[in-house]
Structures are given as C-alpha cells and as structure tokens.
Image 1 (cartoon, helix red, strand yellow):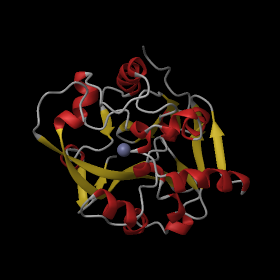
Image 2 (tube, rainbow, N blue to C red):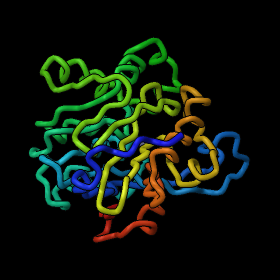
Image 3 (cartoon, rainbow, N blue to C red):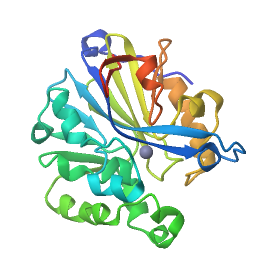
Image 4 (tube, rainbow, N blue to C red):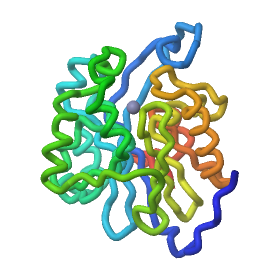
Length: 264
Ligand SMILES: [Zn+2]
C-alpha cells in the first residue's frame, strides 16, 4: 500500500513536531505485550505531542492530572500544561487538540487546555459511553469523570466528532486505525525532514510496529495488526515513526532539553 503524494508537497513542509514527556512508570513485559512470557520490566514514558508552524499550535492528546499519577503510582509527573508552556505555548492558547483515543493517559487532562476544541473519532466516543464500560477490563484504563465531561464539552461546542481519515490542516492528517481502542486515530504531519507519523498507542513501543507485536490492551486484534501496516505505509523512506510510550524516542530523535524531544 502506498499513499498518493500530497499535491501541495513542499509548501506544507512547515510543521515542527515535539514529543513532551510528562510521566513514567515500569511494568513487567508480560503485562504489556500480547502473549509475552518474559517478566522483565519495561519502562513506559507518557507523552503529549505539540505541532507548531501552522496557523496555530496543535496538541495531540492531553495527558492526565496529578491525582491519576498518585492513584496509579506513576512517577516523575509534570503537568502536561507545564510541558506545553516550557515548549513556548500557553496552555490557554491551545485552540485544537487531536485526541488519539480516550484512555485516561490521553484524555483525562483535557481540562488543562480550556480553550481547545477536541477532535475525536465517533467510534471512540461511542465505545466509552457504551455497553463495555461496565467491564473491569476496560474500566482499568478509563477515567470516568473525564469521560462524563465529553457530554458537557460537546454541548459547549468544543467537540469535533469525526469519522475516518481527515485532513485537519494542509499537511496534517488523522487516520482512524482502531485496534488498541475502538476509534484510535494516528496523526501524520509533513515536515522539512519528511512525514512524521505519531502512532500514539497504535504502537506503544518501537518494538510493536517493527516486529508486528501487539500490546495486550485491545478491542480488535486484526485491526491492531492492520494499524502497523498503515503506519509503515504512511511513513516515508525517512521512517519518522514516533512510538507512543517508548523511552527510546529521546534517543532516536533530538532531545532539546529534559522531557522535550524535537522530532522534526
Ligand atoms: Zn497510552
């Protein structure tokens, strides 16, 4: 599968992309990779991603609030809003958030960005307000209070509930892949270095997408495998793939200061 080249090509290669780390935790590999037997610890980093250089800043995901870090034993928490400010953008000046999915670590911090409009897939909203919410297997990765606020935010005119792939701005697109969650969307961004693919939790670690090894938090396993194919197809020869929770992001790309990694 190959993607048609963007008509507007170079003139869209104006974006800069930053990964902003706001927390970390360890987990045994067997709790994380699908049918993995190893009990070796793996470290997850938690990120939001900031896209600059367009008509306005665009934030991908919102992180979570401090209470969540305490309850879940997550260390080195820094407010995602503080990280965005360290990257030079006031949290109240973020007009657009692309919410890749509604797990607690991607959505529970949305109130930190009070002026933003949140773009999320219709299937994702349906899932977290639907029949599976009663089961602990999904409850574990949800923050119900922040999910309840979907309704209030929607009636305040600040939700953009979309379906499928969409060009958000010239050279900036979302692609619905599902798999890990019902309506997971990934983000592609044209930059001077080539096309960056922000996989979010379509690939927590580089190992997921590179070895086609799924995570074990899933709604649809074949869709998760197809998502790996989509990531490879979207990424150009530069392979600017950014895994969603991998500490190696800081080594594969350029760390400009602690917690701030310039992708392109
Ligand atoms: Zn996540």
